[in-house]
Structures are given as structure tokens and as C-alpha cells.
Image 1 (cartoon, helix red, strand yellow):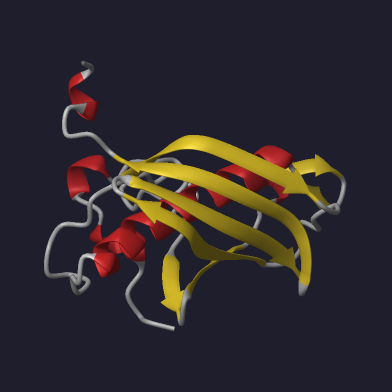
Image 2 (cartoon, one colour):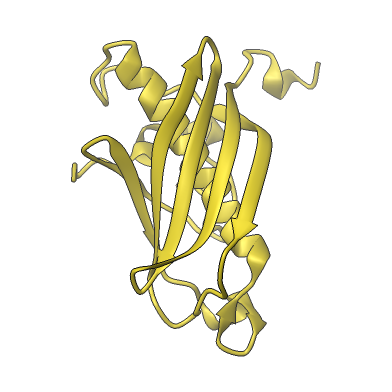
Length: 157
């Protein structure tokens, strides 16, 4: 696994996402790394992420899958274009579609592992598949259609 987290290379002015923004002190601040052809993130849920005693809230699972996938998309596009991490600003991707299948209850008292793979890359669109595991058991699976963030996205137009 590389030592460089994808999210560390997001432009500071837009690194405020609740899930993956390095500048959001209240957020999850997940970190995503390449491991071969997959990306990996790990996250330790807190007691307040509870759905029912002992289990993680499904909304947390969905948001972890979402942010892991958009980070994977940004970095995969960067790699696809032959760029080396840290040489140019990493362009952000936004979610066009998020689908999550909950396969089993996810225990809260363990580190969760997310693994992402590029399923499709076409122009400014990336389709990323993600699995979420707890204690080696896959408990959720997701697919995200991510689009390169348009340049006028933040202008409100």
C-alpha cells in the first residue's frame, strides 16, 4: 500500500466533505490508499454511529462507500491520464448515483475495511464498485457512478 492518501491531494478550498474532507474537523476524514489494483480505506466507527446496540447505522455505511468511491474515481482518472500523485491538483469527482446492498449487520466495535475497484471509465464518468467488510466478513456492497466535478459546480450555476 502507498503512504499517500488520495484525499491529502484534494485542493484545500474544496476539501470540506463530511466523509472525506481533510479540512472538516467534524467529519469522518477517511483516507483512501492504493493497494495494487484496488483502493483501501479503514474506518473505526464510534458508539454514536449506532443503529441498534452493537451495530453500525446504515447511513454511515452508505456515506463511507460513497466517499471511498469518489476518491477512487479521482485517483483512478489521475492514474489513467499518466499523472503521478502530487504533481498536479487532484480533480474532484461527485456522485451521480449511489447503490448500496446491505448483506449482513455490521458490528460497530471493529475497524471497517472498504475496497474499491474501477468497473468502468468513460470520459468524465467512472463507475466504482466497493465492498465493506467487518472482521473479514463482507457486510455491504456498493456501486457509485461518479462524474468529474464540472468547473462551474461551485458557482451555483
